[in-house]
Length: 245
Image (tube, rainbow, N blue to C red; front, top):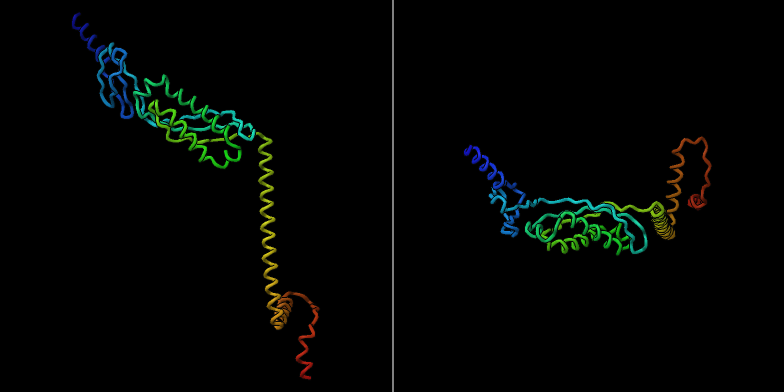
């Protein structure tokens, strides 16, 4: 009976004392309520009843920030969501400085997202996401640093616009495309007129160039499958023959 009791006590002791931490885990050890050190990875031996261990993962965490109702600086109501990437750099601070660092980081990300997006106009929010992301990352990282957490990346994922705003932006984009088409067309007309002016200058200096162009046009017309072709003959073409006669 004594041996059985001893075996049970040994098994209980081993079950309570031995812990195995993975490569990405660290154990914050508390002894009688006071923190003594952080251990891991590998085999950890605790004093039963006296020691308590809190496991902390050091892996990168991807946290989704739910959609937040935001009113931009130009009074447009939108919904914005984002994703943040962070990791625990100091397990001791992450355990003793904040009760639940995952929940705290999520709440901080939501409030920061609303604050930053509310300080910019809609056009800036749509066109300068990299700047907004960098600003969010800097604010979150500075606030979570005392918790032993490093925020590496923040990315705004989706901006949900009201239907009327989407229609207005579509009209604006269409008007911009029409404007560019008209500018391109006007530029083409200007270049064509410039070339014609240059050609007219050459013809005024060299009248024979006009005759050559006329003959080329006649040749092109004669190459078509027309039964009868009528065209006027400029008197200038007959001038040499008249003079000779």
